[in-house]
Length: 633
Picture 1 (cartoon, rainbow, N blue to C red):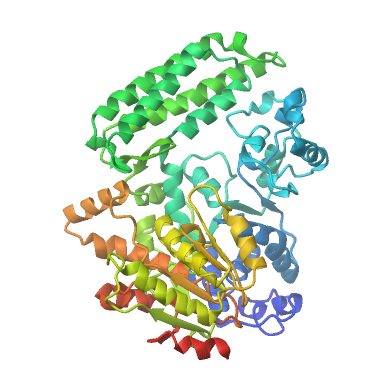
Picture 2: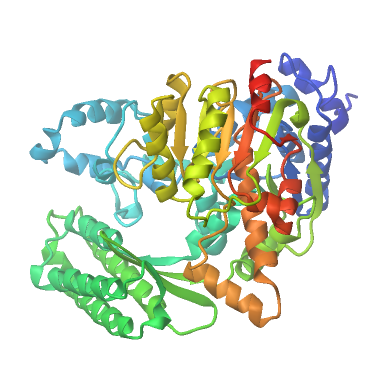
């Protein structure tokens, strides 16, 4: 009788993975992680693993998952990792283990083409005169997935919105295309799957509300350092000009709406936005301005009037005859639900409770109002971690080997914990330079002095750098100085206009000696191995915006409990992000490069020394000219 190989044998020299993967090398951290994950599956326990870059964490959790015989949901925060898992890693591990799991990649509804909307749009001659429509039409007629990511050309988001399978437009079983719907077909496939790959947004929506995923036995949350932020986004109710305009766009596809009822909603929102902007603050707590409640109530009344009108008159307001009573009633119910959802957001913004933070952000485009839970941990504990065993893993999850911060933020009381060290030789491969202790970001001459350090470092690295800034203002200041010098090709991430994130990354890859100056979106989730990225510059310790209403409320609460919010909240969060920024540099065993932090507090403050200790153990250098020899060897 054949014996199934143990986990150690699978990861050993000559084992199952080595036979399937030419060049496979056993890594102590990978095997250690795989053992911990397999124990978690066997015991039904939570497992937290910080897997340093290069550990190979995907294989370390896929092998136990595919051996477990359990239905497993794997959730990530990036499309790149989802596609890699579904298209490459899972099939590879399955072949190595000799198993044939049923695997489904399930995305959000708006990623899929709606056949019914596409069919209805064919009568819109003006729409089909747009040049991209002929290309989209060929794709729509040939696609077997209906997945937007398979569209072989850049597509305007508002154009795609006209054809996506968004729930606000969906009539479910009343649709003539329900049986061959791309989205529902994926949902049905997931019901029969062994492994379901999703993103964190879908995962947390299902955890909080349900209805998106079938029952499963175990969850794997990769890139788990993003879980709190994404869970908070899912739990946050928001009102904005964009959300109102989107609701109207969708309603007008199926209903003729009276201007006497839509204009008051637009006017009430404009008056509300002006009231918020009238404070002169970009950010504020709503409870600081009680007059905002009056404007919210007027907006809610206007939404109720349109909602009631559609409930009473929706049948005669339909722009096209429905295909029967079921479609008519479903369309009307969907429209009422969409407006009720907006009114519910207003209700949450008006509610007075101690569990939520109501705040607003104003800009030239209008005001966004939000209701955010004070803390995601109790909700996550009740609805997820008390019910479902989970693995959480990331390259940045612990602080000096301690997981207490992430457990507190996510509501995980008990878990098996492991730090699987990176196999990379950071002392040999990386250099770390920290600005002098007297160079602090609030100094009047900070930009001049910091730029001099930046320019010197880039002269040694010959460009090939990410300059990671904590604000667009600082990114533009550094970027424009670099551009004016003419020493390197430079692109700057800007808040409006300019090249988007993916375009900037393509430019960086294609441009020798490039310097990309960016903000938060470039601090994490980017894999740029090789010589093209040889220097990462961080402008300052990435503390959260101190006047942000959510942070301010949490800081006040910690103070009232007698805790130190700087030590308990702000330092750990900044350290995690600093580790993420550092992590852009060394991605393979052959990578070499330097990290510069231009904030002298990292050297001059006690907490700065603790932050440095949490970073990968690169060789510290005291003078930038030490990089000359480093980059020449």
